[in-house]
Amino acid sequence: MDFDFEYLKIPVFTGINDNPVEPTETKAGNGSHLIQVINNLVDETVDGLNNLQYGLEHLLPPINNWKLISTEVIDYYAQPGEKIVIISTGIDQNVNVYLPSNPPEGTEISLIKTSDSDTVQIQYNGKFCNDYPSQLFLADRYRLATVIWTGDSFGWIPNVRNYGIEEVYSAS
Image (cartoon, rainbow, N blue to C red; front, top):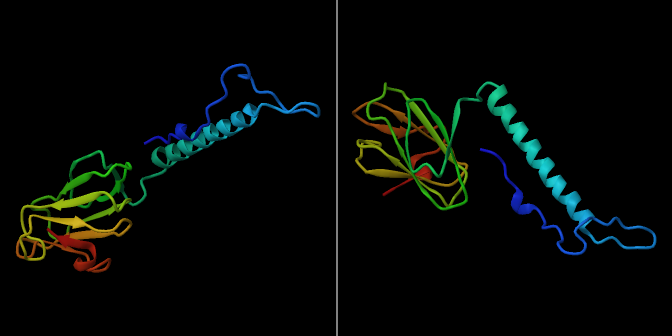
C-alpha cells in the first residue's frame, strides 16, 4: 500500500503567470512560488512515508505476524493462528472473514478493523459459544477480537482476556 496525497496539491496558475515570480522589494510575487513550495512539501512527505513503510515492511522482521487485509477484499479465508488487521479504504464495504472448520484445539484467530463504517462478518459453519448463528459481526474499530477454537463441543469462543462476547459481537 503506497501513500498518495496528490489530492492535497494545489493547482499551479495557468496563463500569463505560469512561472513562479518571487516577491521583491518593489514587486509582489504571483503566489505560485508558495504553491510550488507547498506541492514540494507534499511530494517530500509522500516519499518519506513510502520509504518508512518500505523499511517497516521489507527490512524489519514481521511485528507479531499481523496480516493487513484491505476492505477491497470481500472474502478472506483465515488461517489458524492468524492476526488480521482490516484496513478501511474509505468506502463502506462488507468483508467476510471465514474461519477454518476444524483447526487444532486452542487455535486463535485475532481480528481488528480501522473503521466503524465497514462491516466485518465472521463466518463459520458451526458453533459459536455452543450456539449456531450463521454469522457474527465485528463491532467497533480498534477493538481487538480474538476467537479460540475449543473443539466440536463448544466451537469458537471469544478470548475473555480481551472483551466478552456481548462487547465484541452482535449476533445476526
